Length: 63
Image (cartoon, rainbow, N blue to C red):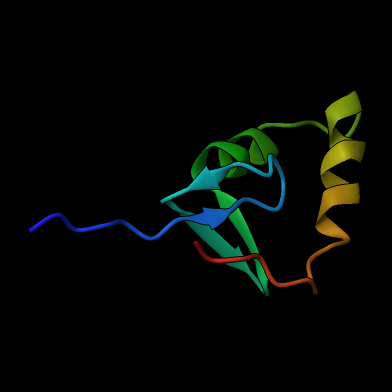
């Protein structure tokens, strides 16, 4: 029997991933979580993450 793993679309990178966290209704994959944690406020990517986190109240889709 083949077992299908459940994936969710990451609210940051928008890729389908199996592992991550839920922040309110937003799913964040492990890779994006790590990248966000290590991003300094002075970095350009910081604003990108802030913009993506504004979608926190939008549920991510399950596959």
